[in-house]
Image 1 (tube, rainbow, N blue to C red):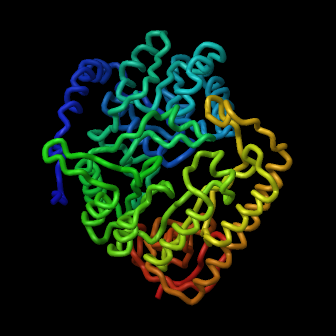
Image 2: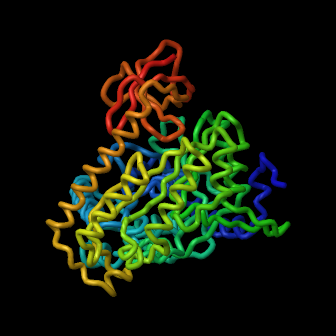
Image 3: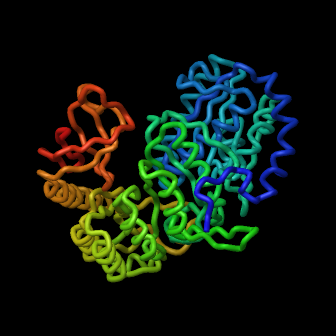
Length: 477
């Protein structure tokens, strides 16, 4: 039904080209003004932010800026921010103070905040704390040329308007800090799930799905550049739904997975993040039936207590989540599952906490991203519930979760002793340049001695002979 090798001309969204026309003047004017100037960008938070930074880099490159990894030599310093936790915002503020010291030594340097924190704290960052010259929300990156020009003239550049249409489908990302092996492809933006603890619907807006053909075209482009793995990104990839404006055919996430998998059998496909209520049997069948779709699902549970899940507005119960885990194991016996977990949510009891510990054990998570609850202004939880769990209790419960997760991960890895996995080499191990690192289909990190003639991007078979809670170790066979 769908062209497996579409070009961008096949996107069929005329508004994309129209929207770019207004930027041509600014781009041409700025190319002469900024030629040779450098930009530096730091990204915090989720993979979506890192992907967005690649879009920003492409837009800046088009007007003449060149990237640098040295903040001290840059003319434009940008931080792509996360608002999911207070700690992340505190980190960004510290970095902004550091960058403002650099600015005093290099007058004329512009400092900007991008992303979720920009949308949430625009007035504070610009007017009260006077830490930045630019504030650009996640749907306003096309405006960067005009905003940079405004800031260069001494005015504050700001655009945090959220969009119901913007997907940046026509922009080819500039791959920053890439290993040349794995690349991100954004497939949705925003989120319609109103989890009571989460700021994403307020900072990234309503959910919209990107043109399926543009996604496949980007996967083809990565393949041609030598990449061997793509990760499809979205706040909730499973709710992806795109209607072809010409044929009215609707592409579901399961269909999109197959389209990307069929770009080339040597290109691995991963995806993140899934919402338990939306992942379907069709997605599981797609993973089962395509060797290059990895046997790995990130399925955030957040809590093991049905009572807490209801307060979080997660729209599923403990029992429902367990049945989903059972179904994954039934359809894809070798599938690995990971999760997000929050401890110390409003009114959480010791019994609720114990249920979270037990669901980690039942689900056999290979890894969890674990945090204690951080109240975020503007969320339903902040408006409706008291943040009534003492910090020391939150931290103690988080320590329990970390301990149990480490035990579960070690046992999961121990079961791999003696097994042989196909591993995609990503690069040198962090601890030794005599070893390679890479991931198997379950997304487990594998460390193994180098062998002459091999390089990042190659597939090798590795037999596991040692494990930790975080890694597998072995030798090429």
